[in-house]
Structure formats: C-alpha cells, structure tokens
Length: 238
Image (cartoon, rainbow, N blue to C red; front, side, top):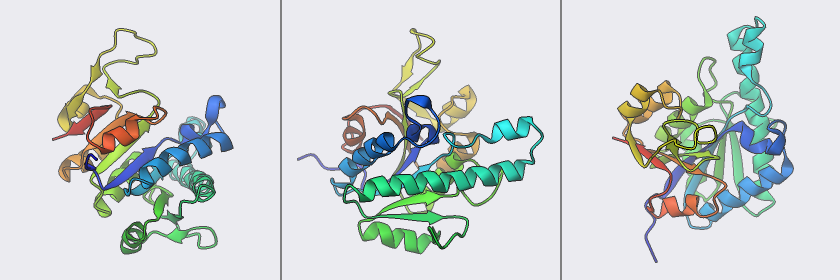
C-alpha cells in the first residue's frame, strides 16, 4: 500500500460549503457530506484540523458598505465561524469521529479556548480539531487564521477545499479556455493576484515553507489522492 505523503493537515473550508445549493444558511445535508469526506481522511490515520469561514451566514462587506465599523463586522464574522464549526462538529460526531471545537474568542459554554499545546494534544489523541473565531482579532481573514493555525500545530500542508479542481488563470465557469496550473510558487500567486488565499496568508505560508494544495472537495478521490502524493489540484510551494 502506498505511503501517505502528509500525516497532519489543516483543511480550509469556505462557509459557503455548508450553504448548499442556496449558498447561505447551514444545510445539514452538506454538513454531513463534508463530514464524510473528512472521515475518509481521518480513517487513513491522518491528523485533521479544520478552519471554516462564515460567508454562508455573514458577509462583513455588506455591513461595511452601509457604514458599519470594520471591527464590529469582523467580530460578527468570527461568531458566525463558531456556529459553522459546531454544525460540522455535530455532523462528524454523528459519524463516529471524535471532534473538538476550539475558539480564539472565549465562550467556554460551547467551545474550548484555543491553546496551542492543547490543540496538538487533541490531534495526538486522534481527535479532529475545528478552529473557530478566526485569529480572534479583527482585520484578519479565516485564510490567515488557517495559515497561522497550520503553522502552530506543525501541519505539513494547508488543503484549500473548493468547488473547482485547482487554480486557473481565469474563472473556468465563465471562460472555457481558462488554463489550470498544476504548480505555482508563492511569488507567482502574489504577482498574478490569483485568488488562492489572501496575501497575508500566502506570505505567512511562504515564510514558513508551508505548502498549499487547492483541490475539489466534492471530487470523491481528489482529497485522499492528494494525501498519497497523486497529482491532483494545484500545489503552491517554494
């Protein structure tokens, strides 16, 4: 049997992944589908941590356009990520996967406070860890939270789960001639302004030599294939 290339990963999910066909709210069926994908990876013996966005529940941009304070908008987004994290935790545990939600903002009644050593210990005990509330600070995205947490827990790769099979030079849904990249450097992503992750997250990964792999979460073989080193998606690395 082939050897796993990655033994500890951080999976970055968009909030829209839980939104289902409508793109907003929390679709229980979608949560269960994502949980089943994570369970496939977990069952291979891989340590799995997750960061999930909040776009299905709250878009801070809408508040900013109406004059909302940026910090207030960002804190609302952080709270929304915890709601998504709890929904995913419930879906995972109903499939028999022990899960912990850790929040960068203390809310002890529903989630553990984020402590790096405790998070690592949970992973060592074969628990999936979902990091909620971003970095706990406004002005930082969940992309940056994913890069930061991955670095802190010594993940070997950040897997950015999307609905397309990699990174293209244009939107493949709008441009049938769009070209897919198999591999990119961090500098290429920044210079081309490709929407892999935001520039702060890319820079943090570059400084810590942490690869980013963009795959289609809804392709049943792409995620597990990536863990065995198969050429799927787009790899962003040095």
